[in-house]
Amino acid sequence: DNEGFIETGTQDPVTYPSDNNAVWNNRVWGRVSYDVPAPGDTPLMLIRTPTQVYNNTFYPTDGLDVMRVQEGGGGFFGDLDGTRIVNNIFYPLTADDRCYMFNVATFTDPDIVIDYNMIYSAGGGGMIVAERTGFTYDQTQQAAWFADTGYGEHDIWGSDPMFVDPVTFDFDLQVDRP
Image 1 (cartoon, one colour):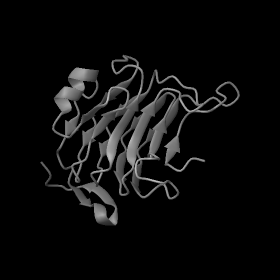
Image 2 (tube, rainbow, N blue to C red):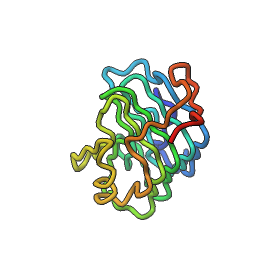
Image 3 (cartoon, rainbow, N blue to C red):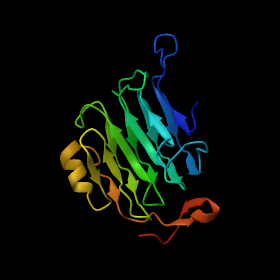
């Protein structure tokens, strides 16, 4: 039933544990989900258990959330302690795309690390949505995100990573970028 790039969590965590997942050094782009009724219904990544997400480039092209982070819910069990989202590039294209959607009990969990990510929205959409609080942060509000959550102190928001040619899926960075 998974229509995204990766989903962690299971309805039976004892029989089918889903902890300590690693997603490293990937380039994920394009339309990943084909059968959802509306944009934003299926994220590229759905994280419900401890997951390490390092050194990836995410480039959705169809109005999806790049990453949804949630504790349990929907019959799936999970504790996010140990989750690390570090040193990734998020490049949503449309105003409907969002980098993160958080559905967690607290935003100041010291056992979750989210930092050193680059976030740029070519379409100017909501960058981060904190579902339980109703807050939405755009690419000019990195300082507010850090003040409210403690996450993303060293993030870079709103700066184009200057890919060589994302239209042809060349996500190497231009040599003369600032």
